[in-house]
Image 1 (cartoon, rainbow, N blue to C red):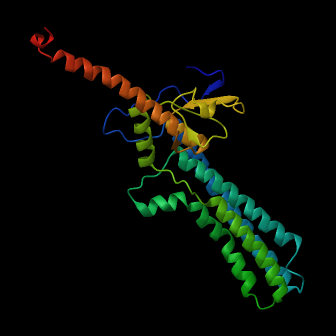
Image 2: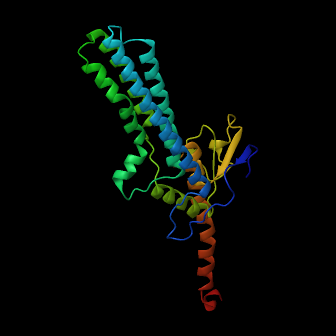
Length: 265
């Protein structure tokens, strides 16, 4: 069977073989380089967010000390800028982890690397919130309003930095081995809005009327580009059935070869 959908190949054509039982996933040089770039930009954006927070605190204290309202355009604008920088840095950081995932061998470092965006959200907003809520010169209403604005920004930044689908070397290795065990090659298919990768381009789940384009690549590329970790159940069952059909004739032929000739007379 074949598909009439447009198939777009992503990444390189060289897919590493996992036939060796000692195989461990290693990112390509291109993926590792891109991951390092994303991490560098993330750090710069997070540093910018910290600077924005420092200026927000300064503008807040300046307004309080001069008797002006701390709820002004400068303070609110800097909080918004802080949020944008933290959020953007976290998105790039999560992408870098999908390109060059950490190992689960050291659980602390594994969680720290995957959830660093959440930590940076607290670093970029918590000192400002403390300054707002503990300043005795600010009235309760102003504290409530400004504290709420900063608190909501912290919540949004924390959600943006949280990684619910943490990537790891071990996970990439296991998923790649699973696909190669079923099909003999590290090739999968997925769509822009799909939640699973598929072993066959003509799978009914990706050949609906709403699908115009199907992407083809390795298991790692499906994770890198769309953060897909789920193998299509229909494709998995189809591959297992196909493998059983290949094995069964071989077994029957072997049994036939062992039947004594006298028994056939």
